[in-house]
Amino acid sequence: MTQTVTASMIVIGDEILSGRTKDRNIGHLADILTAIGIDLVEVRIVADDEAAIVEAVNTLRARTDYVFTTGGIGPTHDDITADSVSRAFGLPCEHDARALALLAANYAGRGIEFTEARRRMARMPVGAEHIDNPVSLAPGFRIGNVHVMAGVPAIFQAMLDNVVPTLKSGTKLLSVSVHCPFGEGTIGGPLGDIQKAHPDTIIGSYPKYQDGTFWTELVVRSRDGEALARAEAAVREMLAGLTG
Image (cartoon, rainbow, N blue to C red; front, side, top):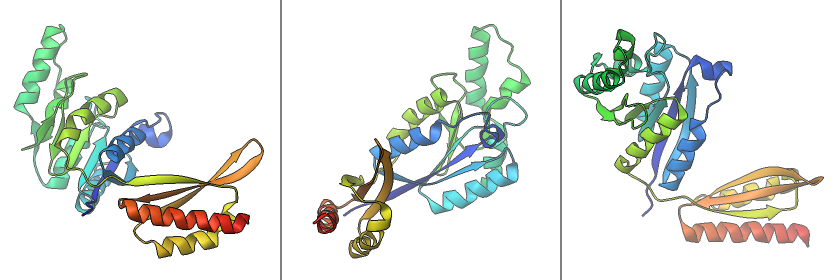
């Protein structure tokens, strides 16, 4: 039996949409989830707008097994992710006692004032569970199937390392690549027929250009090894017919 587990991602921040900050978290999350058999099926990038964040959270948490958010949990006025996620779940957003104690001790040990702005990083929906942050200590949180994490790549990656062991994984997607010397216009018709004949596979075509030559990389994916082999054989037979 194959099992499919799905995930989605919400990247939050005006700085991403304006181009001032280049996202580095989408690719990392996709790599990690693929490696453990979870399909990342949708990514949304939304502004620092509470209504937009609430809509995205509520839509995606109903559609996929897991939701991951990045960004908007820092100390400034535009860090509104905790408020938005709380609203999406219909829960109060309050200072978490354990997070406050953790941050207070950290700043005290560094001789830094624990200002009201810094206290904002301890806010989360009532009942949320911490996602530990070994880099800067300010925790992310999980509520339901939504994991809320920092946007700074090093912190996001460290938080994700702590989340991965808690996730259920599905059957890993197998893949095989086939070199095709023809362009997509030549193979589009027969490749579509092969896809229809092998519905338990995903067949993708990716145009390439190298050393003055156009060619196409064909990638066949499936969770069923035998189905993968049958579709690959059909693709290779199609290419042999075009070559011969």
